Image (tube, rainbow, N blue to C red):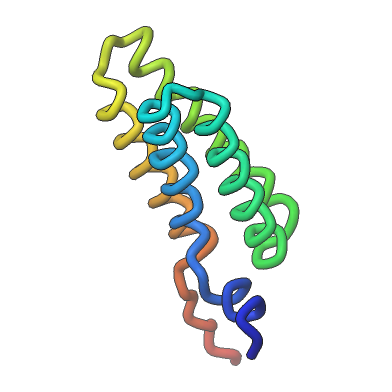
Length: 115
């Protein structure tokens, strides 16, 4: 199997979700360049979306993309409106979004016995 084929079949898309949310925030905060963090967020989201589409089809890909973007928005709401620490807000939404993504798109499913 080629490296690309291996990544498509086995690489957990939940890692891309975690990188997009947490590393995107960290890069934006650390550099002071929000657009750079946004680029990391977008690139990781597009890569994850590609895996979701190939593995689970368009309906699941759209649902997980909505979860990913929703987690980004929720982190801002928790940090700004609720007053939670920004890193705590990002950590919470990252854990939740990556966990759901893993269960929906990455966890190995045993095949049901036939007959």
